[in-house]
Every structure is written in C-alpha cells, then in structure tokens.
Amino acid sequence: MAEVTEVDVVVVGMGPGGEDAAGRLAEAGLDVIGVEAGLVGGECPYYGCIPSKMMIRAADALAEARRVNRLAGEAKVRASWDPVAARLREATADWDDKAAADRFTDKGGRLVRGFGRVSGPREVTVGERVLRARRAVVLNPGTEPVVPPIEGLEGTPFWTNREAVKTTRAPESLLVLGGGPIGVEMAQAFARFGTRVTVLEGGRRPLSREEPEAGDLVAQVFEREGIAVHTGQKAERVGYSDGRFTVEAGGRSFEAERFLVATGRKTDLGRLGVAKIGLDESARTITVDERMRAADGVWAIGDVTGHGAFTHVSMYQAAIAVRDILGQDGPPADYRALPRVTFTDPEVGAVGLTEAQAREKGLDVRTGCTPLSSSSRGWIHEAEGFIKLVAAGDELVGATTAGPAGGEVMSALAVAIHGRVPVSALKHMIYAYPTFHRAIETALAELK
Image (cartoon, rainbow, N blue to C red):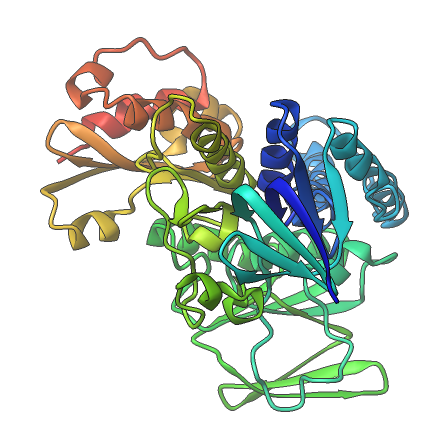
C-alpha cells in the first residue's frame, strides 16, 4: 500500500515562487511539504536569470573595453571563457541546491524529492507516496524548454539554455534556433567571446512579441557585431556528424559546432495530472482567478498561469496566494504594469501593452517615440535606442525603453502605468538632467 501523509499544505514545484510560498506558509506555522523533482530554487538561479546575466555581464565588459579605442585611448582585449565558467560554477554551487533546500527546511518545511502528480482533490502523489493537504495545494510546476519535432534533431547533442550555461568554453560557431529573449541574449553573449553566431528566427524580426522597433534595433546591432540573423526561417532538418551540426531551413543549409534550441518553454499539464481536479490537461496554461485560485483547495502560480515566465511574476503571485491561503487581506492580482526586460545590448525594457496589443483591445491609441539620443546623456554615450510610449486617452498603457540600462529606465514608466498617473501630469514632471530617462519627456511631447 502507498504511504499516506497528511499535511496542511503541499507545494508542487519549488522554483522561486513555490519556494517563497512554501517558506512563508511554514513560517506562519503550517505543516508544509514542498515537492521538487529538480533543483530547489528552480530555473532562475541555476540556468536562467542569474547564470545567463552573469554571461551577459562578462560579454558586456568585453564590448565596453573595445570602446576604449574610440573614447579614451588604446586597449587590447583578449576574451577568455574560463573566468565565466568558474563564476557560474561558484554562483550555482556547481549546480547543487543544498543551500536552497536547507533554507526551506530551516523555516520548518519538509522537502520531498521526486515528481509530484495531482492524483485527486487536495492530493498529490510522489512515487509511491501520497500527500494529502488539509488546507491547500499550490501548483508551481514551472516550464521545460520546448524541443520542436524537427527531423534528425532527436539524439543529437543539441543545447537548450541549460547546456549553454554549463559549457566550459565558447564554441567556435553556434546556430541559434529562435530569436526570442533567450535566443538573442545567448547569441550576443557568445558572439562577444569570439563565437561565430547565426540566428534562425521564424518570424519577421527578433523579439517578435515586443514593439517592432525593438526587434529591428536588435537586428541592426547584431548585423554590425557580425551576428547573422535570418528571419522567416523554419528549421526543416537537422544533421550531426563529426562534431558539426547542419540545419536545413528555407532552402539553405547552415553549419556550426553547436546548435542552441531556444523556441520557447511549456508545462505538460497532462503529466501534472490536472484532469483529476477538473482542469483541462490539453491546455497550455492553468487559468487562475485574481487570488491565484485554480480549483477548490488548489492555487497555481508562476509560468503555468500564462502571465509571463518571469521570476518576478512568480514571486508576485506567490505573495497573493499565501495571503489568500492564510485568510489575510491584500490587493488582488493586477498585471497592467507587468514589466519585462531582454538583456541584450542595447537592453530592451517593456511594460504593459505594445501598440499592437492596445489596438487589438479597441483602445483609442496614441503613440510617442523618440531616439535615446534626444537626451543629452544618450548623445554623450553615443547610445543607440529609443523610448516609445503607448497611451489611451490621458493614461499610459504601455512603454518600451531600449538602450543602456533600458530595464532601469522602464521602471519609471512602470510606476506611472501602475499608479495611473495622467499623461498631462507626466508632461509637467521634473526629469533629472542629464539622464537617459530625460528622453521620456521628449517621447511624451511626441504623443499624437
């Protein structure tokens, strides 16, 4: 017979949001079991946010050093992946989650290793063990890299982002399938270490979900840096022989030492067992209400809810779910000012709706766009980029800031959207001089 354990709360998936929720509930005095098949802490600290941005930081240091000859004298740069690999091993504890696991158990929680599957109302099965929750089940299963069914791909040593961050050397050449955030970030990072990089993107431009100006800017910068970008390309066949990949796409053949597949991420809801609680296992996401409730006694948070595969969304939703489980007051979920950043150089920050999304909603749209060089600091830095604002009536509903520290500049606009600050009020603010964000004032003047 299966071993049955009764607890107050079962948290399935100990990624950033799951770990945070489980820890908070344990600290509140509840009996909590966290279930994790992989690493406690999830994708972010081991493969996603932290390692990839360390790679990007190193690559940006090389790029900045190469600007010395134009701005400040003479410098010679020799790129080496060795310190990058060493820092990544240190930051991830060589991909060991003991510190994160101890952080949770020190709060009073219990950790169960293995894949958790919903097996009934408020019930989760892990192997031969059944966990029954008196109070709540929190689903935070995260996502896995999507591997498209391309002929010849299966069985080859292709990379996802996980293998890319574990590499001990920058490859001589790299094919990147997918021009989304992961694809373009990895492409630029490796290119700046001397890797010959080619990006194959199925859409019309990189970063196809963002404003077209952002994708066009990234494509222009990549061309200048020697990164080949081929749009409208769907990989049809993959070959691997003698340590080389060959990818056929759009009637052409592309060859490289390594092949990075960056075509999105997904959750297998069928494997998770959500049909046992009346949810659609064929869906891409789990629908939740404004308090993260997915079913009776079940809350869902993170990537699986479809509100953005970002650590900050998962943590935000975790706090809402915890309050609801504990019966505490607090505001419901509000995604109007959801921020996102692609850490290329120039960096692309965005918040709220794009112009196209706003028009699809039938809003009376006004846009204003200005090059970052309209600010004195942008001119001083010879910075490429822009600020684009999307307004409906006297209210901002979206913004994109591309350029140095684009994600930081975006934060000011995120506050404006979240707080529903009228455009008429923003036009009469004092913007510090000389700063990149002073270009916001010019973009506001361009709204029409």
